Length: 391
Image (cartoon, rainbow, N blue to C red; front, top):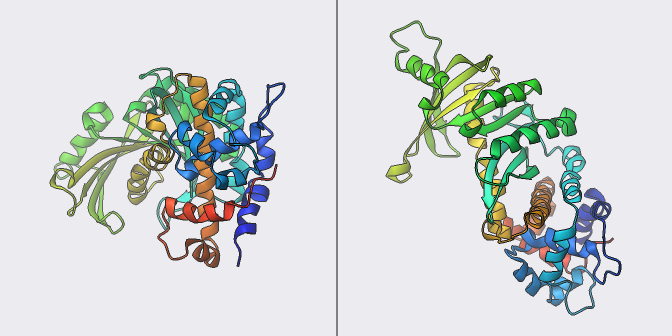
């Protein structure tokens, strides 16, 4: 079994990457290097683990890399050529490119997930702010079988994450329609009445994970109920168990309350990790949600899931594309590049999931190595040498 045709089919037919590259407009009058080659090079940076444009410049001169583009020149393109292109490429076009994979993700059932084995499939979104290369941004990621960050917007500076989040919620709800998440996950920064009202206006629910019960009066009231549940007629419910995946004992208490005029469930989650270092053995969190149908087990899983945007998006981008230290003075150029990176990460993640559905193909691709991100794509690289992008 030769996987070359299957891998080519993934990019050419399933993703329809050649057509998506046509979203970009070349403003140059006499281009020597095809703009699509420039975009695809950026698209491949996370795949090859290139953490700077200078690194891309070096690899762009290698014969194996040039074969991907059927390039007979000295190199595919230099880092300075790519920098100049990022300066003039339309911001709207990189936004459209990032969103263009949405139908593919939905068709292949990659945008939904179950919080627990017995729960229903849900559409889940995660909001968080971060800083990369000195640029502060707000990110909205769909969390299904894969992590798919669909909005990355410039905040300008620290402290402006909330206005950016409001704008993204408005835009994304209109754009996604029925694909808009059933549940949005936030941290304490977003624990305010405006967020609650805006999210509920969109006919969806939110869940906020906090570390300090003194942050809001509704949490203080819930803490009082938990502390005095045996002394009063309380509606506190409790559950405990052992998490074999995270290797921890857990206990969760939940009660009802009200915030911003909406009924909410407030939970106090305590986890004990016996094998961790002493300073990290005991973990506590406070979880507030407007979705009163969530079970305590689902609430616990949703609270853990909020970290997915950190682990599967921000940290993966930093590790595979060097975005944390990627210096780029021009914010427009940086965000153009970041959106292309995010599209690539989601697409390559989807590749792993789709190929994993065929046990024989995945076994052949792995050839006995562990199924880590870098191991898988070190194998895929061999199948790409003959040139894969037909446009």
